[in-house]
Image 1 (cartoon, rainbow, N blue to C red):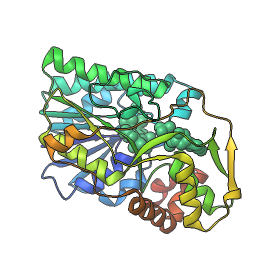
Image 2 (cartoon, rainbow, N blue to C red):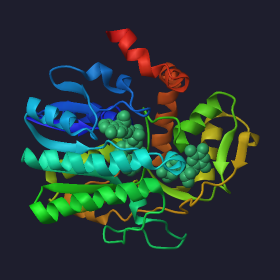
Image 3 (cartoon, protein in one colour):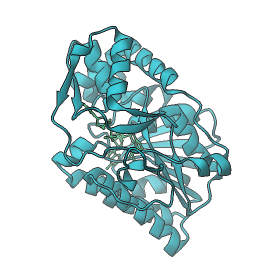
Length: 333
Ligand code: NAD
Ligand code: TYD
């Protein structure tokens, strides 16, 4: 039996595979379209009979049918998505294609194959934005997305829900807060600031830097997803978070301190349109029902992350230069 992991060459998908490869008995089928965010190098050392890479697109039904006919897939963990809010503001089309249409095709093909478990990896951003003193999001909070990214993820969540309600399809939805850690594409806040701090560039903070996110180290998120895959109840939604709310300026200052550079490198830039002010997660449900909780503090996670980027400078250089698109072919074929 095999577990299909979509978005396997992206940030969280790759970390998930590194983490579970020695924990599960099943073969892992790592599917990825290798968009700009996908980097085969993230999982290259793991390819073996236990982990097979399939360069396929979830928006292409025959790609999915090919994969489901080639392997005996019993479980699906669905990470593949367009994931960056700023890009969704520039152009929402790929977000609707992959996050909505791609998810619908994956649901259909998975249903046809009568799989046993399906985890749809979603985000806290589907709940919308909170004020500073509002209570954290629970799973029953209304869905009120504000960006094309979060709207497309919310749409995919609703499709997953409908497959459970209509067909009894064995799906669970996870909604997690902001991840950080190894292999994150340097367009997101933490890796972008690490990259800029280390390369003499200014550190661009949107608006006044007071926007708040809850931050979770990626391995904690991956543990939670595995817990839901193994023990979650079909039809349920599980919030996941790091219990670590911080505003952006605080994070940027911590990175500045870690690199021993001057705060004058901070550059306040034009705010993101429709910029959600605050996300915060109530994670009581997953704590009590699945006995999961985050293990890594923000301080420890940030230290590990900075250490990883420093010792993987060549990975970062290849991503920034664009060489990562051809590197694996040249090295391994
Ligand atoms: P990412 O952008 O780093 O990776 C996405 C991966 O999906 C890439 O490897 C890309 O090539 C692949 N992909 C994109 N379109 C595809 C398609 N049509 N077919 C097949 N593969 C395709 O994203 P990430 O940060 O690893 O996020 C993974 C999932 O977790 C996403 O669904 C995202 O919404 C969700 N999530 C992310 C965060 C976060 O902080 N990064 C937080 C909560 C939830
Ligand atoms: P991001 O990492 O894009 O995640 P998301 O928007 O999905 O939460 O951004 C995190 C926060 O950091 C968000 O409030 C926007 C802000 N931000 C900056 O201030 N400067 C930057 O260069 C980036 C990429 C983000």
